Length: 412
Image 1 (cartoon, rainbow, N blue to C red):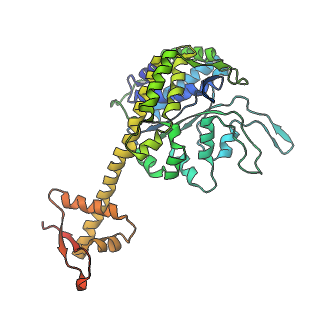
Image 2: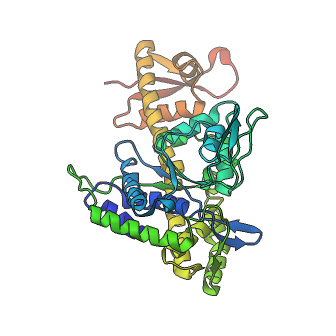
Image 3: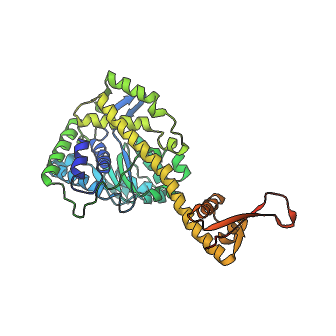
């Protein structure tokens, strides 16, 4: 089912099918709700998925990747709107704002505001950088609230003056961001506090260049919506007042396959501290994906093909994280070094020559890290032909220490 939606959206358009699939996974996992559960030890897993589409501006087609899913949702509402979840596209700014979208009722003056009984909420955050920006504000607890939502924990008031709360939320999120925004704004705290590793992060950019993309035929959209309705009827998604009423289980073969993966790929060292921290929740992610894939086959038993399909997504996500936070980070660092090298050239043109220390203090006012200055100098020295030269010189007054390195423009 997920593949059919991806292929339908990717045919005749520039939109990457994997991005369409990821957004559909988040939407469907939301629409299913909290009625279906898979017990593993003392934890009951539900199909709650956060996905984050990463792609360069203009090439990622991030906005287009949700359009087919929104069309399917609209067709679903025309068939039976009881099964469609609430959708929020206005952006998130605070914990209180998130709670207000699915609150349990509250008093406003003398008026009683009735509760929102359906806690299914699909958040479409086309500018995910906004969420990261809000998380930097002092006192803002949005990122903590989203962590609780992924876990399914009730959202209680963050302050005594605010009595609004939301019990048993079922929030799923589809976000989009450029790689530069993500690497620049994702702080060490978000990498280590479990916020980042709750997202299925996928790198996806346009799959082809088409000046006149074709819309998915409405008959195809209607057929896909009918399939979605069949799945939601099977799971009892309209029973929003009932939780954990449909139990799932892993077949004996699926248990063996999952155990095999758990002892190997799901817990192996990725060779990068950043990648390890970002993929810390590979195992529960795989289980949630496998649950979803089984439900699209209208069964409550997770079989080996569902585990393997989920593992393929985990591998794709791992490769995406490695590219964005390791390979792409190196590219961004190189671009920054090139920009700094132009400033060094202008400085040497005016000054004639300068030591490494003088470049740091006079050219960059001591505000650029030593490693970046070294990268910029290396770029100039290794360019073809070299744009600067370097020579060693004795320290003034015979002071102890390594010889000075003096840089100047190369002869034309």
